[in-house]
Length: 194
Image 1 (cartoon, rainbow, N blue to C red):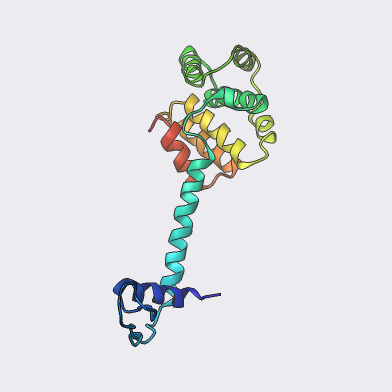
Image 2: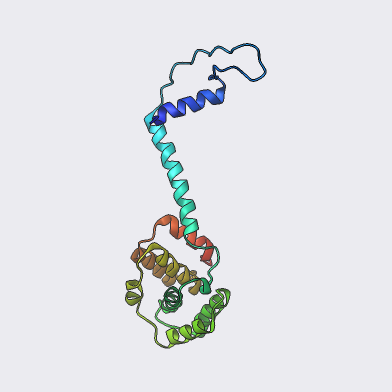
């Protein structure tokens, strides 16, 4: 297996045209003699590690963006996930201790963008009448994707201009153990801004 510093050195020499093939060039009558290779440049392992870290972080950022779709379509989710998302919206809306008509309109507006079925409208009515405590909701979160779903639904349901809602979202993110990169991605897609 070729080591990273040697590979990078070879790529650099090839890019500068210092390394040629000793085979006969097509259509030429003469054989090319190999050019004397330049001495191996010193490669700082710290630079190689920094480049590798940047490539890994870029890949992870892209992966986190792909974990959750750009649109929030309840019909594409299984029944359990759709119900969790709706219940998470209600729990988030009630995070400030009250639930008024404005918050209900916000949830219904968000629901209308999510392509709900009649059954999901029924789940919303039940959740509004008998909301589940947050601890009960979080017990049903078994993976990162479900956690991202609950956080995205909560983002849609709250007015982030209110400090209590921002604190609730921070608390929820900590409880769900979502990474900073995933949170940023979800907030860019589903957040209403501060």
